[in-house]
Length: 432
Image (cartoon, rainbow, N blue to C red; front, side):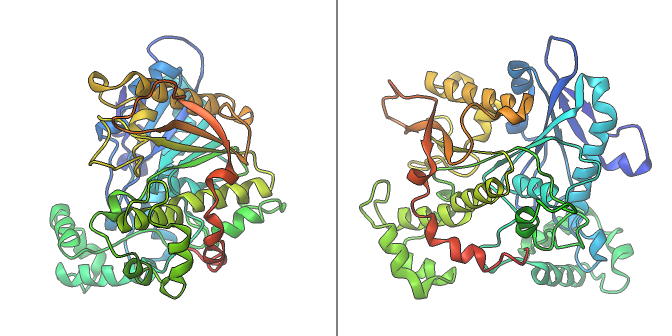
């Protein structure tokens, strides 16, 4: 690993912090995989052991780059000029520019950069696709369990962030001359104020500087000559049980559906996800299954279908496995972020099963293979085919005969996604 806390260059680069993992042997210019972490725009860091790219780089003969970006109010301040509001996203673009100018000196090929990221990291990749830099600093993208083009629920938006900003100014006594005042407040004090008062900050439409006004339309209209969309090969996917951790303690499906705005049509959801169906043993399972499809699985399907519709080479994956050393509570399933340690090879090796190692190798090979030759894909056909990792193995299950990677048709996995099409289409002209 090469750690570059302050790369040489313009003063604006002083905030960059990159980790670069290179293969232990070999020569020549290697494909580069550029990781963007998640964290709901509120937290995250490349220092997490989960994101150690050493195994990935060594096993797959690629250069792995992980770059920090500012989060929370430090990366997304409120009530500043819109073109200056998404500093965290601009950090990512600056890091990609640094890679273009410098990675060749570290064994990477700047013409062979593939983005990959999870959750909010995938949202950030979607922002880079829908309002692409010029010249384009990457040639392919992998989006894991996230997207930024479909607003599926009323929730946090620019008005929320503006209210959080005003609250923060009052708490720090910076209502007069806010920015100079806030810069004098210790970062730890600002962070504590945000956490104690549940203040939210995130990206806003900024005049197509780094976050599109109508990102889904940018993708759907990308065939036009003046398109700002990056028409690069895409690998996108989700996990089987994304929302399991977020549904802990929720046991009233009707109450949940009213809370998210679906109460008037609750029957069509409870009918589609009946208690007693496979993996739905009670109302908590029912809520988790609905939330998984609404937020993750069916948005993934929609983005993949939109991309394929406009002739962008598009592949999908589906992660569906649970192992003793990755299970976070009994029955957690293939929860949100569960695939990351297998992609990076950072799962606990001493307690890993043989099948877990096989799934990890299959995922690394697919991700790296896509980076090495995006037009050829990750090893299976484009949509509607889906590459399925893990073969639905569960803790305590005999994995004999299970396949680390197999394929399925999307119609067999997306059977409930028709429920959400109208919901997603309500927001096609707007962003977060």
